[in-house]
Length: 354
Ligand SMILES: C[S@@+](CC[C@H](N)C(=O)[O-])C[C@H]1O[C@@H](n2cnc3c(N)ncnc32)[C@H](O)[C@@H]1O
Ligand code: SF4
Ligand code: SF4
Image (cartoon, rainbow, N blue to C red):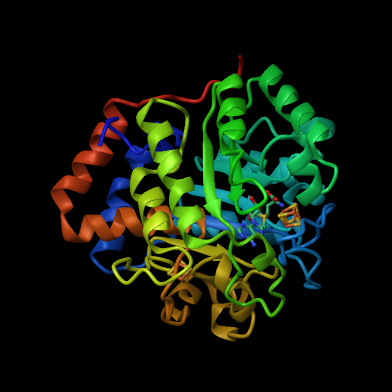
């Protein structure tokens, strides 16, 4: 396929990517390494997006000092990339302090945000290597589904661009915006960045199925993915890989038998209370396994993550990682070639300034 790299690799810090190779080899050989950690630092949120069930779940949160200890502990265990997620990470007053600590010990720090609080807090987040901002389309679509957030999101993008903070866009694809994905790509182009796309889904632990109201027909999702693949081939800034878009188009919303799970082996998620698990679809189950408590059990907790029983994998980062590592197992040389070409010949990088 055209383009020498998976463009999401271009969003990663190249030195950190190069330093990750030994951990990847170890992980592929079967020894769990928490190369990339996603920490859902809080479930609290200032929005109530209509398809989301992962906000305002009552759960204790680790203190600032506990999170700092966790970051140091996992860095020693092989973590190179650390991303805060939520809920809304900016609900935590200590986010900037934690980004600074992680960066100071050599981690590529990032966070996902709905963007609403970014402009007010922009002076605190300069140590983020990348900020992922959720945006589903033009104002009328964004505001109908994600609260009245569009103007504040743009204000946040402007504030980051003015300070040279790198960011990417992240859109959920559903019936609400399936004809407007080009608007997200246009905006990414304006800011010289790139956009990720993730299909709407019911998270595996949800009993609330309201997200189904945004489910398009499978054929429509396939068409949407074909459109994104075409845009990417034309050199437009679609960060999701060809393999990712093709797999979603082919499988959504059903099973994907040919994808192995590397959750808990090369990447992991951490709950607000400090329990480790494979991914965002198994967060609530994690807190029920005492051996997965990182604060009590240290990094041994990673070895206690229960085996994956999934037949589907529709969350953006886990699917990207699972596709890449599954391909690496099947054809190590081709996968290594892709990583090396990604390191040597980055495609569209992300400049923060217009
Ligand atoms: C749970 S949010 C947490 C981070 C932050 N609050 C935000 O909105 O970016 C992470 C991502 O999941 C997406 N998301 C929420 N509910 C979803 C669903 N039912 N299907 C697919 N993606 C969903 C959000 O739009 C967001 O991009
Ligand atoms: S901002 Fe993020 S966590 Fe909050 S409701 Fe929306 S998608 Fe969910
Ligand atoms: S297959 Fe995907 S959704 Fe399932 S546990 Fe693994 S990473 Fe999570």
